[in-house]
Length: 102
Image (cartoon, rainbow, N blue to C red; front, side):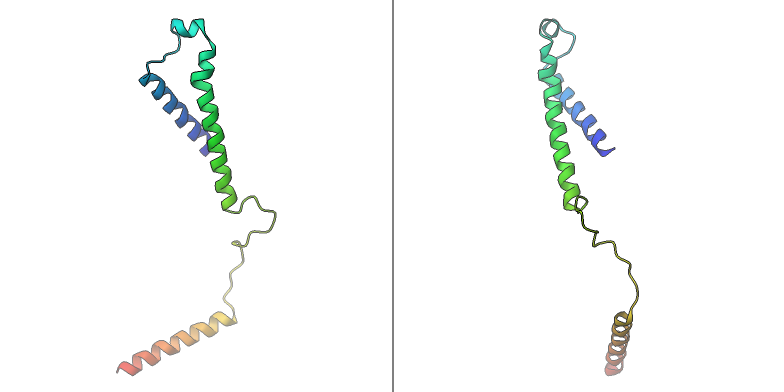
């Protein structure tokens, strides 16, 4: 869905640029030379589509979506013996600090 919204946005930007340069479809110039449609509309759109595709591909690869290995960020979290030991140590240190200030 993101790809299609970006393409629609690029198409609107191309239309705005053509309007600013006073290039319009349906004029005598376009009827004489229909390849201008390719030059002014489709070529910039295809270049934008290729760029958007590369950016989305790079974003997916940087998140690790293209690898063959199991994702390391998806692990089962459990409260183990080491976690319990650290919690007891922290509680003891907090109590010792409070008693030391009294």
